Length: 188
Image 1 (cartoon, rainbow, N blue to C red):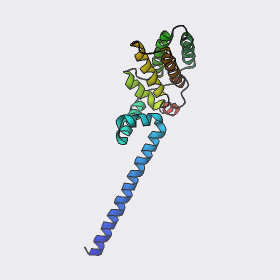
Image 2 (tube, rainbow, N blue to C red; image 1 turned 90 degrees about the vertical axis):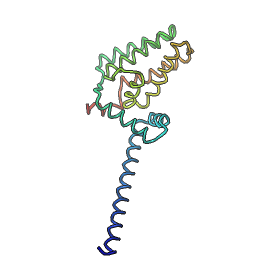
Image 3 (cartoon, one colour; image 1 turned 90 degrees about the horizontal axis):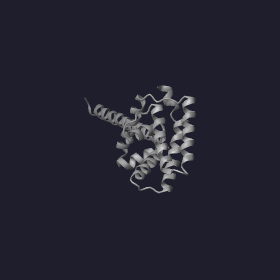
Image 4 (cartoon, rainbow, N blue to C red; image 1 turned 120 degrees about the vertical axis):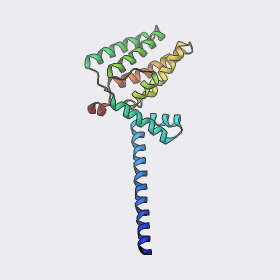
């Protein structure tokens, strides 16, 4: 092999490696962009929690893959109506019995999630599963749950309980009228 052929081969390898590197960088950028768009504020929360973009994106990809294996379904109109009526009762109960209303709201959220098909394991797993379909309101769920836990320990004011009800309502409404998970349900 003469020197010119070796130079041409080296240049070809460098060009191919450069193209491959650009392709890899582009696919990582698109993945990040897709996950940011899909998860919104949840992307930033997981990124802060893990401290590393690659790890955060791995966590979110894992959640998405886990979610794809679940059989999440829409509520029937009669179920939706019954849940809505129960929510209205819990909300109206708040004035006279904030603790009881929050307990009812917490239980009702869990029932709606179970009726939709979300696994009812520990709280963190439920929040992770819900974050795939409801990334905007999952933080409300976490905040409400945190207040509910503090309430059990006597560490919540009536204003805290009111905020928890507002947070639960945001998730409740999203679970009853799912907009973000329609595409996934059609795939299931």
